[in-house]
Length: 183
Image (cartoon, rainbow, N blue to C red; front, side, top):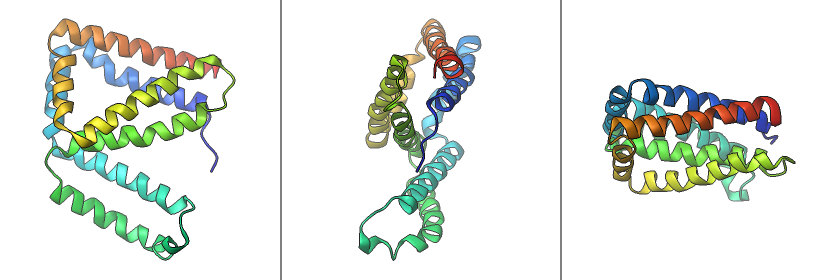
């Protein structure tokens, strides 16, 4: 399977960083309220879980696996929606941070694939970001209550929220620049 160009990944990540962190800079109280409500919110948890499981099912369908797995492959299109519904019903408690952690784990793969053989030394920025996301993804999946603690820490005061949002916004702008000019 062909990987996405690093420039597209950098532009996409930069756009997401800018859009998510503008509210932290402009409206820190609203950002804090939304971020602290996220771990217990149901609809974002369901949507992220559906996205994660669909992506995982697509990867499972297209990856060459063991020979005995081939008989299950045609059934994945039916199994994945059933698994999504079962996860949303029975794993509803703190599903949003778990699903966010799963998404962070899934997103790291294409980033690392695209940056692996890129000639620019700037490729280490998305690589380090991907490994940080892997660590955060593992923590959020295994211990989702840590997500709320982390969100409380980064938004404890309006100044901390604004400074953190500004740093992440600057990283997003750097990724946009790298995606447009360097990569």
